[in-house]
Structures are given as structure tokens and as C-alpha cells.
Length: 426
Image (cartoon, rainbow, N blue to C red; front, side, top):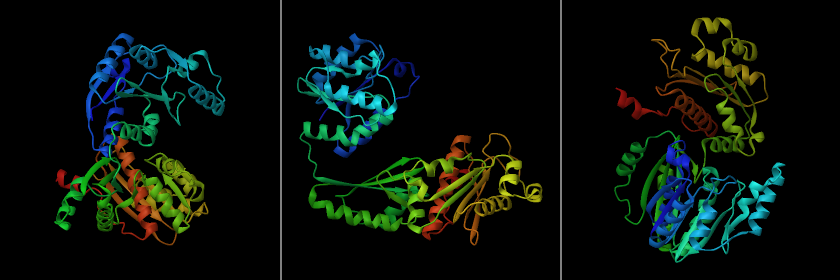
């Protein structure tokens, strides 16, 4: 099957927007066992778009057009496709109904420009967009299935698995007789995974395709089999991998660390409080980004300055003077203060040097202390994360979440998250 991409927009041509959508699409197509045939990027020029559509449709089984579905003058996809197919634009009732519902839910007034998003090539069918104002749509141009999708990555992502892949599968008469298992792991490197699997499973079956994908901060392990007769084999080897890396598995499919932590807290009937300095509230933001967070989260303190550490959490001035803000003594007092001031059962406290300034010979940039646990059983650890500021904050947030997840689940918290990094530096 030949599948092509046509990406539209001057912002892609100028480099103002980085193309992440074709990567998203290609990763999804792997589930069908196919790869893209050709990718073309075209600016906001209707004549160029028409020529590109006609050319790609002639040599492709499927053409995915991404972008150009918005309400402004430079959103030309529907017009260009209609002219390429020599068919008129018409107001599509489902597209209009979607637009009206989208506007009503947000208290928006539909403008004349918005209404152009309901003008689609005659005879096309809708691809639902549960997020944005513009629906996607698909039709046949000759023998080629043309699918038009929004350029906003969050909108495209929702469409791919639920709608685009089934359309492609049906158009190409591709077999759906297979099984894919995805395990999400945190706390081990990609090379570490491969080495351990090679050593522990020298009899790995040829029928089970094994793949790895780094999706910071987690790693996805994918086991894929083709044919219903191998479903049981997939299940058996997936269970073996999950058992081997049980400490590191946070869930399946698209499980996030924040989800895994919240699920662990809910299962243990524990409520959490956070006390954050260097992460600036990122841990609390992650926890509360998940539905049902109110069942497991009491609240959080962002105490960036020493004054706030003292006034809000009761960290003593002697501790700060003797040990500094980034120290075991300080994060333990932050944890203790947060737990005493709330009804939470467990807490997370963190203080570090995110950089690029602020380090010293004994506490270089990248140093971070974390404390976690209950009033009766607190723990603390030091980590060294020598990386750019935002990467440091994301990584420290992820480690903190995982440490508490492990604590609540009764798993070891002595895991060396960055063994490979340390080997490379030494």
C-alpha cells in the first residue's frame, strides 16, 4: 500500500512550525505494517496545492492532507481538493452542526470566517474532531482515499487511532488479525532493556516482533504478532516481559507517570501533598492534570525562596544556614511541614539547582534532593541531573512521582535511574 502525506502551510516552509505530525502518523501506521511512500510540504498557494493533490493521488493508494482546515484566508485545503476533483464546495450539515456545538460549549459566537470550515467538497464524509472547531473529511479522488486532517497536533492525535487507521485498513483491505501489546516503563534505559531481554530470553520467538520507543520520560516496549493464532503467544511473552521488569512497568498503552501515581494512591487509599522548590509546582500540576485527582490530592506548596520555606512549611533558619536550601535536612523539613499542615497521608518534597547558575563545587548545577513518604516513615535521596534547566525540571518531576509510586506500592526505591548516564560521564 502506498501512503503519502501532503503537509500544508507557510509556517512549515519557513521553519516557524516544526513538523511533528508526520512522525505521529508514521508511528501509527506501523500498527498496520505499512510505511509512508512519499511526503510533500507545500506553502499556502492554491495552485501548488491542487497540483500536489492531483500528482500524489495518481501514484498513491492513500493521501493524508494535514493542515489548512482553519477559518482564515490561508486555509486552502477544502478549496484546493474540490478544484482538484472538479467538484463544488457545499455546506456540509454535519460539519455545521459540529461547529455550532463547539461554539455553544465555549460560549463563542460563530463568525462568517468560521462558517467556511463547514464548506467541504461535495460528496465527502466527515472525520470527527472531538477537540477543535474544524472537522476532518475524506473522499475518493479516483482510486485514492484522500483524508484531510487538522494541523493542530492534539486534534490530529485523537483522530489517528480512532478514525484514520480504520479508514486506511478498510480501504487497503488490510488484515486486522493481529495483536499489539504496549508496556510503559520508567527508570531503565533503552539499551538496558535490550541487554536484559537478550540475556534472559535467548529463546525469544520469531513470531513476536519486539520494539522500543523512547517517549520521554518513559519507554514503550511493544510486542506485535500477526495472525489470531499467535494471540496467546503474544499474551504469554508480554506477561514474561512485564514480570521481568515489574518494578519499572507503570502501565499499558498510553499510561502517564501521573496516572500511574494517582492509581497507586487510589488503590492504597492515600492522599498526597507536595512541597516544591526547583520544580515550581510541576508535580502538583501533573497530578491534577488527571481526572479524579481530587480523590488522591490534598494540595501543594510552591516554596521557591528560603523565606517561603520558613514561613509556609516551618523549615528552620538554622537548617537553611547550616545545610542550605538544597540538602537532605531541608527537604525532610519541607516534607514534615507539608504533612503537618494538611490531612494528607503521604507527601513529596523537592529542592534542587536547576541552573544554569547557582551551583558550587560541593553542590553543582543539577543537584537535587527529594523526600517522600509519611510522617512516620519519611525517606530522602540525592540525585545529580546534569542537563538543561527545563529537562532537569521534567526529569526531577518524573523521578519524584515514580519514587512515591514505588513507595505506595511497596516496591524498591533504590533504583538507579541514570546508571547509563553515569557510565557515559565517567
